[in-house]
Image 1 (cartoon, helix red, strand yellow):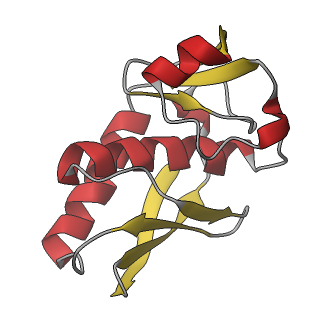
Image 2 (cartoon, helix red, strand yellow):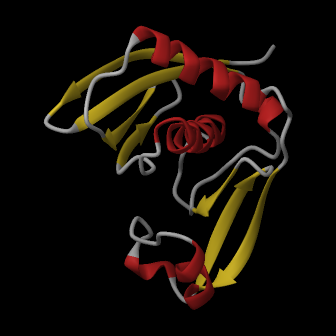
Length: 146
């Protein structure tokens, strides 16, 4: 498994699905996840408005507050390729693909570490966004639960 901070990685899954649902865009094509702050890059056409930034933050936090279970299942690569985009998986991932589900909200192939339930993530704080050359960057951090 790739060594990611489990809370941040789970938040990234929820952010990705939120972007897909709100803007009909693809999941992030690049990300950098760290304990203190993280970023996700999306192919996009423009900057976000402040209202959109607030709506993203609100939706991510509402989803995390649902206390969704984070589970995994293993699919044969052929089956997984019919259901999911496998482009971001390493070539060496083999003939079986791990699908990570965040409740009924998100499902995608993933090799990273995750929390067991979204209640462990904390509060999602959208820090800033920037746009250039067709790339929207979203920077975020988490306020940990007490």
